[in-house]
Length: 255
Length: 255
DNA sequence: TTTGTCGGTTTGTCCGACAATGAGGTTTAG
DNA sequence: CTAAACCTCATTGTCGGACAAACCGACAAA
Image (cartoon, rainbow over all chains, first blue to last red; front, top):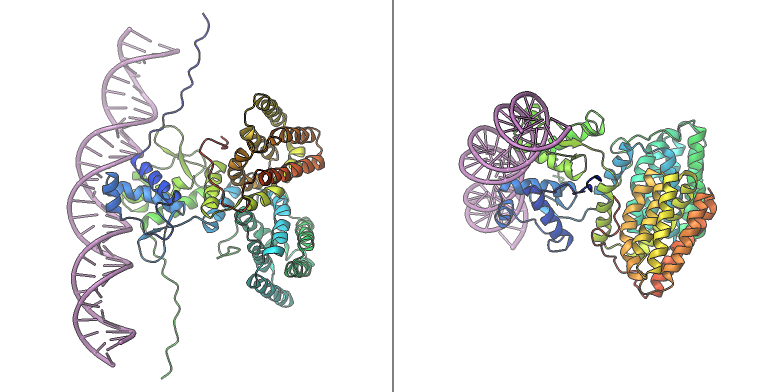
């Protein structure tokens, strides 16, 4: 008697009503039926339309909120929204942290992304972008003169470069990494005295290359800068392969 | 009488009780008090502990669900979980699509990320990784011989390389982009007959370089491969700067 | 060992009530 | 005429309670 053939059945997916509400609304938002800025129909309208209780609708809506597909602008009425970096980047950072991502892992990715950002910025930066970078340079110089940490300004400069690159995919991919690298910069700067002046030099070259539309130079200087960052981390005796910690809130976040 | 000084007060952030439930539970999960795999306390327990109604607890829990911080393993009881790629990557893809990301934007980032993945894979790939890649090569060869599209296999190969890189940050950053590039490959392959054989050649070289621990060669071949992808796209007369569309579900997703 | 049954617990859904909040319209005062 | 004050009503937030459905674990029977 041979063994009976194993019958592999997928687990039955029975969806709660609140999940069905969520999915239906999600679909309407994604397919454009409900557009960004539109008010979501009222809970009672949705309850009637879906043939469920208002509580069930509310539960479905709560799921949409966490996805950034609805949000409150002013007042209490929810409006449809498009999830963006502010929804996704902190979540991604947090997921990386929970999975114990290391400085080395983050740095490896930054080492290819930041130079790309610099190169793209050389082609795409607007006058406003350049002005913001110039301002950041001034502030960095001032912070250094006054013996203050340039860590926040460094992160801000990187963010400004990335914004100037005008590439959605890049912006979304790099921001979580930037968020997680900020505490590293903060930790390193007091331990490595030459870090501050070196970063100002690098920023200045990067800024000038971007201003002049010189993508190659911007790329090269950004590469040097990110490589320096790692060297500084090592010089500071900080652990490349230990899990990074989450930035304290308000630290490096944009917006 | 001079005008009274304008008093700029930030808008008061009054959080609904369900938001407070959500935040508190989120905090407990992030700080490790509630650990992955643990059952979430029952709704009634939480209601008692937080001093709110059970409905309010449920609404807070719904927010956690969308974040992947709780999920259902088997049965109805929720367990604590760590959000991973399967939570974040489709969301990120979708956000990019909603923001009308273009092939060019995606390709620019892939052009730096995929070669990085290949280089890292050359150091980090396990025997299982290599076996999976080898299997994919065989299947690709077969698909080409039978006149079938290798698009899915191409995406799978890229995914295998990225997994072999053993870098959390890279995995999370690149997957959304891979998801969105899959329809491009699918569209291109029937229009450019040499695309199939060329990708098999590239994959073979990449695979061998990774197997032999030759990071530079892996990097270079992956660069060529991704550059080829764009050339193919252009040859096919597909629009670099039009927004990409979402892959049909089941297409390119892992897991 | 496997299947069936039972009891208890938990989750899902519904209903209804009331308070708080915000938006829009109207009235009043300068 | 305009801005501020006031009012009304609709909507959201929260609560309590009820009941059905689903699940789990324990135990007995085959």
